[in-house]
Structures are given as C-alpha cells and as structure tokens.
Length: 359
Image (tube, rainbow, N blue to C red; front, side, top):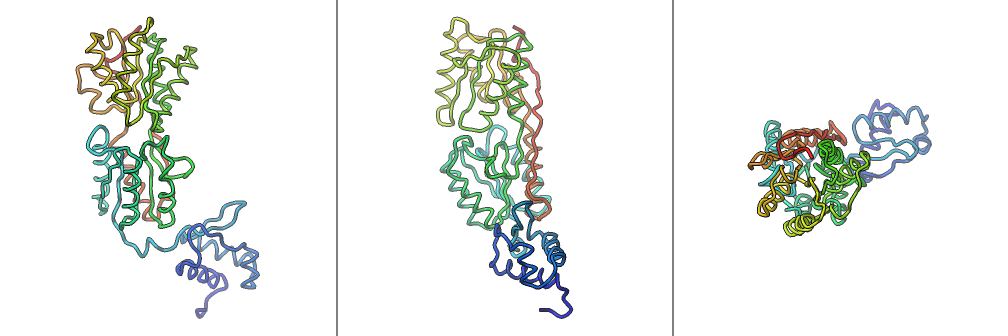
C-alpha cells in the first residue's frame, strides 16, 4: 500500500496491478461490488468510486444485468505500433484503388504506415492474410470480408484480434455475430431504388443477375424483391440469376442466353455491379440487342466503368475514397482509444444516365 492512498485508490491500484500482470485478462469478469466491498472491508460507495476510475482509464466496462468486465490490458501503451493493415478482396481494379487512396491519404497525414493485403476474394487466401496480420506488429486492420455470405472459416481470427487488442473495422460487408465496427453502403436500399426506378419507367418484367457468395449481393437482391412486392410486380424466379466468385463468367453468359430465349423476355436487367452490367451489354451487343433501346440495364457502385463505354450506366453511387478516408479515421480513433466501435451506413444515392428507357 502506498503512503496516503485513499481507500478507493487502494482498490483501484489493486485491480490495475492484476490487469497489468495478466492475472485479469480482456473479457474476464471482475468480482461483484459486494464481494469487493467485503474483501477490502469498505462500503459499496467506495467500491463504486474505484470502479468509476478504472472505467475512466478504459480498463473496465459495466454491463447492466451482467457485471463488470475487463476491456483493456495496457498492451497498446506498451506497443507503440504505427502500422495499419488494409485487407481487401481486390486491390488494383474496380472501386478498390480509390478506397486504398483514401485510407493511405489519412494514415500518411497522421504518421501511420499502411500494409496492403489482398485476398482475391478467396477464403483460404484471407485466412493466410489474417494469420500474417496477427503475427506482425500491427495495431489496426481495415478489412472487407471475402465471400462474406458463405464464409464461416475465419471468424475465430477476429476473436484472436480481440484477445491481442488488435482493433479492426469491416468495410462493404460485416459479420453481425461479431458485433464489429463497420462502414457499409446501404445495399438493400440501393437494390430497392434501382428496381423502383425501372418500375417507374414502366418495366414490369425485370430480370436480375446477382452475386450470391457476398453479403452485398444478398442485400441487393432483398431490395430488388422488396421493390417488386411493394409495387405489386410478380416475382419470377426464372429471371433471377445468381453467380459466385468462381462461376461469374459462365453464369452470366448462361443466364443471358436463357432469358433471351424466353417468349416474353425481360425488358430490363438489374445487375449486381457495373462490371457485370458492362459484361451483359457486351454479350447483348454480340446478339444484336441494343441497350437501352431493346433492354434497359442498371449497374451498381458508380465505378469508372459506368462512364467508360458508349452506354453510360445508371447506377448507385459507392462512396469509395470517402469510405477509405472515414475507415482510416475510425481505425486510428480505435487504436488511440478515442473510439470503441464506430459504425456508419452510407445512403444509396441513385445516379441516372442513359442505359435505361421507358417501356
């Protein structure tokens, strides 16, 4: 006991020593207020004063109806790492260069280093990346999960991050059961707005080609279905095509061939993203079908591809660089103990171009 320590300081320093010496670890539950009061022969008021100070230090948190838990172990004070990892499904194409640019810009300004990892939207690759991150001097991770709607293999690695006090934030998709920090676009809202726009143009027979192994694809499909239901448009499963990361090229071709053979073929197609939309336009063109004169097409993400071809795509705006900037600010705030689990959902803004026409 230190000279002139008050009773609550004695309790406070007792638990600080236990946490520093790893006798109490992150996630461990502390004794109840009554148990602490009995052990130190003090009032519960004194115990609450001590716990309040520990909470102010960011070492514990009180959960109503459950108890008090340790949430820090001083590791970030001992480890002055300025390394932040960015693990995305892709790096050099589509929307990802802009996301990376935003992240790098903020990290550089704040004196942090950026380490890039790429899963190529492959679960095994992602696991290898997570193992590498876990074993390096990295204090924070920005990650887009690979094949997020079917990925059940790597969630234990995020739990390891929690144990090692490696902060992480998920972008574009996240696992609800992990209750993580995240930054996402409102994909369901985007699917709804694109489909409703087509309905407002008079289209009733609207096909969809969507990605089924990513959460984004499933949410966009949900929005598509919701718009059809709300506007009393019949849902026809035969004109809803789905593909995976591994079956993309063949699935898109086969799906288009099947709907073009229909006696009453769709007058519009809702595509998972701009890349798929342009692929559809290319295939249709080879069959002598014009966009939008014969079939209207909508994309998603408002990527550079949306305006790269002769047909300018109607699409949903993805925040890209803005998301990268915000993700970097959030992860720095988490690493520095200023933020706990920030979350943000971007509104799905529709941008209309000339890939659609009235029915």
